[in-house]
Length: 181
Length: 122
Image (tube, rainbow over all chains, first blue to last red; front, side, top):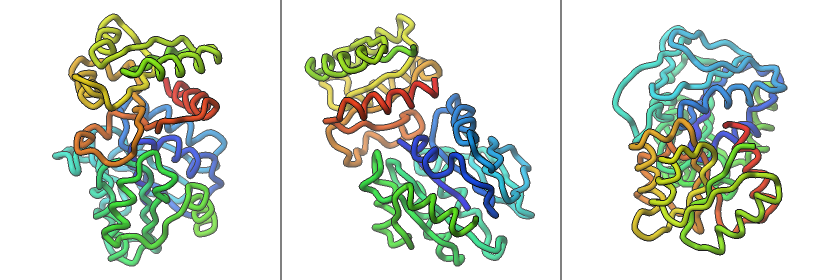
């Protein structure tokens, strides 16, 4: 599954992903954030978690029980053979890495189950990605905008009819544990 | 403890935030404009910056862009203070530079709790 998040996201990610039990899923996180905060975010998500949280590197193979945090400044794609690709390129939706780029790189039939989650953030990144996730039979979830620091990313996805479920951060965590636990 | 700079053209907000955070042991610097914020950064300030958006002359977004141009971002974290959470076209392109939003008015306990989490990243 791919989780995308922007302004206000790190503290919500700690709530949703921090300290998780080991799940039968690989979680890829695209967070718009200055690069120097990525190692601390990784550490905070790892604290008390049975998942292995790592900053993604080019060529990483997606494995259950792992969380892959996109590094700053490169787009992240889910390539063939369940391998992560980090690629340079123009910003998409004014950002790099872009949630849309990551979600839209998921190929139909490549995984038994697929889910996309968009958390708090400004702008419209993630709406196209969630629509793609739905189009290939995956589950599209957004954080309830009323619980967001800024809700325009989930609101855009809702407005574009790209969403299956609207959940609070605690609700998203419960869904994760129920679905992949 | 990590220092905090509060940037706001409203002196009541500066006093309120300063009083709340100093009572919790934070060192607080205040700036009454984006320009004053940039001057403090040029003087070497490093830490958490709580930045109002709606300010005359250089507003919060313009100040964030100036922080980027000045090369100050690696030593600060920027959290925007805003009285509204509606999308603003001026935000575009700044998603990767701003860590979070705090909507005014805020409760003192909530402010302290969030500031503690932010400085954990610094």
